[in-house]
Length: 256
Image 1 (cartoon, helix red, strand yellow):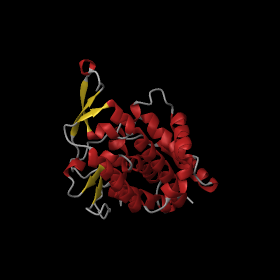
Image 2 (cartoon, rainbow, N blue to C red):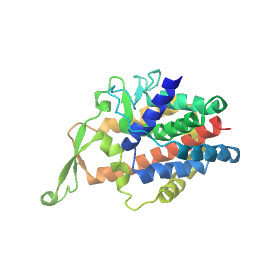
Image 3 (cartoon, one colour):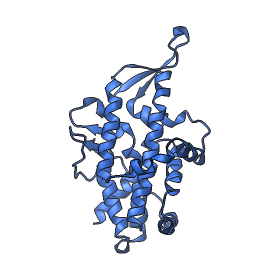
Image 4 (cartoon, rainbow, N blue to C red):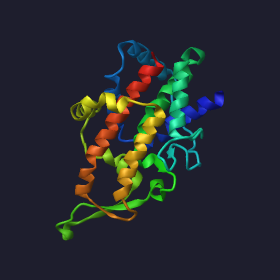
């Protein structure tokens, strides 16, 4: 049992750096909190306050390539039981919070931290691995800032993880968490029911479809111009909204 909670804590710590920007991550949680049931807010706040007692420890990064990823089959469904998988981590943390009376304060806060971190990883396209799709394991591209004026063109090497990680929200320079939350309210405020429906494994399958759609046009070593990066901003906006709504739906279920 103790091993499980060490794993939960490990994932929450190690992969926070692979999420979006700090402001975007927090903005997603701000957005989620707006959709918590009134009866749940008290428990949510209590556990967050407990978290101040337990600083996060620095740990080594696991070497298994499946760790911190969403592993899907050819049918885009998640069936894995591997302890380091994002879906499995969310399920285990959710079980801790459902049965929090049987768990210590530290175990509760680490479970909540795990859900915070892994729900965002679940909605990061670069974290989705699809069986038989080699590209889903990651690759590099060349981002270009000019297309019509080659002499002003400058290129940079970016990984697929960077495109869908920090880079996806760096364009919103100066945005506060509250501004990100407001953006999600405006663009996807009416999608709560459709985005929240289903189980954790259903959400993983939905992310399989999202990832597959982006991997259709993406190719290793391709030129990726600024206009294409702008085109995919609404996709990332949608993924943030899904993460927020689903985070709220899960907390409403496990903390009731």
